[in-house]
Image 1: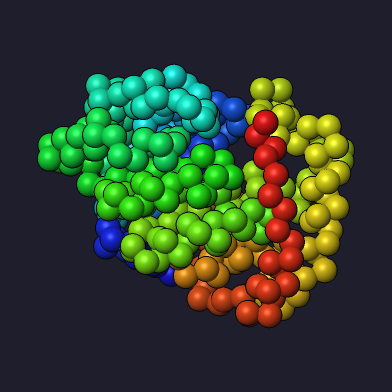
Image 2: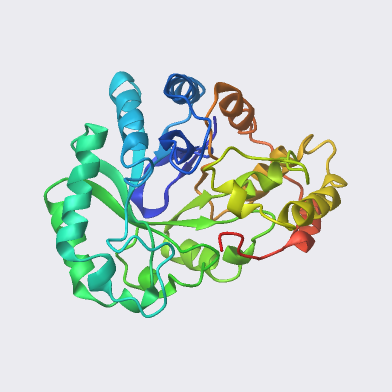
Length: 322
C-alpha cells in the first residue's frame, strides 16, 4: 500500500482509506457486523491505515466497530470522525446560523460522545460534517476546537464540505485553522480541481476524497433494472430516470478502459489518485472482497496524462442527493 502525507498534519496515510459510513448500517442496507469487522481487519492487513467514520453513522455504530478494530490492532491507525450539525440538516442551508449548527457546547459534547464510542483518548482528525463559509470568521467554533486540542481530545481539525460545493470552504482555508478538507471528487464531479485543490496545495491542507465511486454509479454495476433494499438511501439517489443517465455516462467511459485500468471502478479510483492535492480516497467498503479489490490498486501505477485528459471530458456535476 502506497502512502501520502495528509497535508500539514504530517501524518503518513495510506492512499486508499476506509469509508465507514456503510458499516454503520443506517441508510445503507446489507452490512453485517461480522463481515464489517473482517473487512476492517483485512484492510489493515493490506496496509490501509486511515479510517473515516462519523458520529451519525448508525448513531455511533460505525464508530464502535472502528474503535474495536483500532484497539485490537498493534499497527498505528489514523482515525477521522465527524461532528454532526445540531439541527440535523445535511447539507448546511444557506443563511443558517452557526449557533443553530455548531454551538460551542454541541461541538464539545459530540466529540466526547465519539471518543466514548471509539474507546479512544484522542481523535486524530475531527471534522465538521457540514459547513458554510459564512461562519469562517466566527469565534465560537474556533474556541471549541482550540479547547479540544488543548485537552488532547483531538489532534487535528477538518471540514467535510457540503455535497458538490468545493468552493464553499475557501474562507475557512484562509483562517489557517483547517488541517484537512473532505470533499466529493470523482470522474463526474471534478469541480474541486478548479479552486479547492490549488488552495489546498498552496496552504498544505490535506485532502480526503469521498464518494470516489459516485455512491456506486462508477462501479459499472448499476443498470436500469438495479434495485436496492427498502430503507437504502440509494433508492433515492438513483431514482426515476437517474439509473439510465448513469448507465449512459458509464458506457461512454467504458471505452477508455484498457491496459491502464480493467474495470470502471479501477479507472474511477485511479482517476481520483492522479491529482497531487489528494492525500487519500475513502471508498465505502462493507466486505472483504471490496477491500481486497480496492486496496490492490495502490500499486504505484499512475494514469497517463493522456488518459486523464480524456477523462476530464466526462465531467458531469449534478446533485442526486436531492
